[in-house]
Image (cartoon, rainbow, N blue to C red; front, side, top):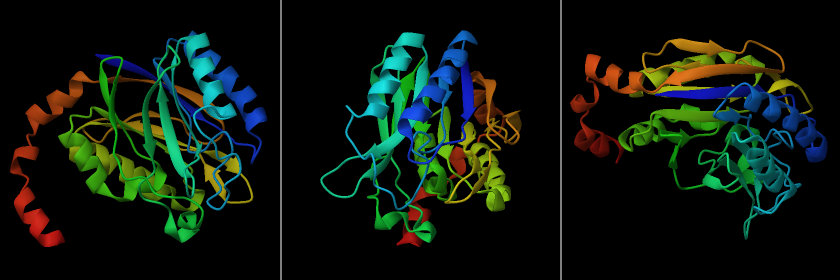
Length: 263
């Protein structure tokens, strides 16, 4: 089964959601006309990622969420987009999977906050991994810094995920890590990993894009390069089971030992 993807390597205007959403609508329209099942935007694309900003934190009736739901239904295409989710305390850095009918299918709040960037001083971490079904695909969601923690991806594998979407704001100076982690998470779990990164410079950092799709063998199946762009790719989900049959790694895991070691 093919899942047709569109990566929006978006250059955000910082704290300008109205302007960003206007630009995003054009990309969503193009993804739909290209036959994509889903378009994936980078981490906090519609406000820009700022680890210390709580501006525009809101609920699911916010401008960002309501606009994305409207666009998904209007253009009949799924959308993965994020926003600063209002809570009774600090907001959460939250990604939503929205179906092509405009309904929210899944919500994931970033579990591993970027402490080196002080994200935990303004945001609350999520606690719940998410695996959702869309267009016949089992999809996991992680956000940026989550990539450095393989346990989350192992959990997704155990839940039957076939592809994990990773929206990010990953800076230019650590692009080698970005590529290494995505390829590693894909190869070690024998599923697809789609990393969609920010492009351009702002007052927080410089971003070089580099969005790409890694397949269950750890090979690069599609690559966006640098700069703002749309990239179209297809994930043949049948290769997930095929990779496991060719090299059946997971039966050799020693969960009982790993648990002892971590304790």
